[in-house]
Image 1 (spheres, rainbow, N blue to C red):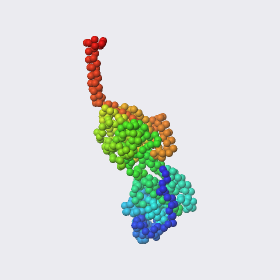
Image 2: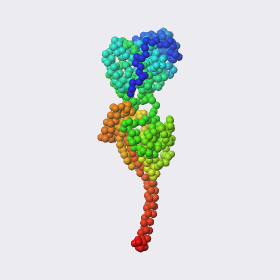
Image 3: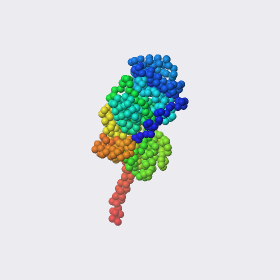
Length: 536
């Protein structure tokens, strides 16, 4: 993944003051508090005077503290009227992430445009709010992160413990590497968000633990939302730290790895599912794949029925090879099939009958389709009956559920559907080499070819030399253990005549043979009764 331009680290001057107006926007300053009775009033007093205005509200949510945080906040509310202050207390402890969920939901439901998170223990300076708010007001960002690590030496001078300073950098470097980002710090709790952006990510599915902050950054990155970092001072006082460092690091490592595997389509995690489902798939060309195998099997100049044609990308490649193509799909392509606009038929493939005379075609392409059908058995039966006397070749590709990655996930007790890949949530059937062979053979098809296809590493990692090397290594492993290392299964098959068709052919052929036999018999009788004719 390339480093996106949205990470504008230190690209905004933090000394630039907030405009005198929020441009008609509303801000919620959300103070997440837990056992903060000694600091909560100080934090509220430190909110800059420039933010004491009608379009700004301060929300304190006490996360069911064991001390008098809530009472202190209420007393402050009664004694002071410089800004609108709302004080809430959760009925039971929600955790650091759970408290944030409440604050962000409050901001969205009450139509705030921005929400700024600060901590009730005073670790993050409220005085920096105007500068941090600037990129949001100016429309330059969807999220602003206050970073203590833009100037790493300043973090040490501010009292950050050495082990946290080192751990912060190690974890951030690991996360940047896996996610393709360039943030200076993933682990600051000083954040400002656009509520419009928050509403686009499923933050309520995130953990209630401390790595909530990492999960929401990953969601913003996955959604291609703009993140700006600005420097903030580091302050460590006598506040109580509730974070277990080793547990936190383990959670960060696991969460980031899961997110990357989700991006690659190997693993599915709903919290990182921020895009609509893919209705169509891109071409996989330039390396060994299901598409290159299918196109290589196409007969130049042949008539092809492309079942489940999607946008017509495979059809376009077939036309380049001189084929005549008819596309069929349940969805009309968003644009006419290109480049030669082959014939298109809109049809639900789960219907039993076929809208075309299948026997007119030389080949029928079923690329990544059979696993989406409600009843593949009925489909191949109907297709065989529809072929009548002429029997076109079937070219089929489907996912291999026996692939090593899915076997390993089952071994560790993990099995979940995703948006694409072998465990695509739209798949209704899953096949191995043996089961796809049995499906076709029992339905009356002759297997002409069946082989394994490597995983599409260039699609996940970019079409570069390293990814193509992985494809070649995968292909070599397929030759060793096809069922274990094949990501997809490629099949060429041909329908054998049905009993009805075979009986009809038998009767027709027998009638012709009978006529020929009778003619020979009559010739023989004539020769026997008229020897002179034979001798002459």
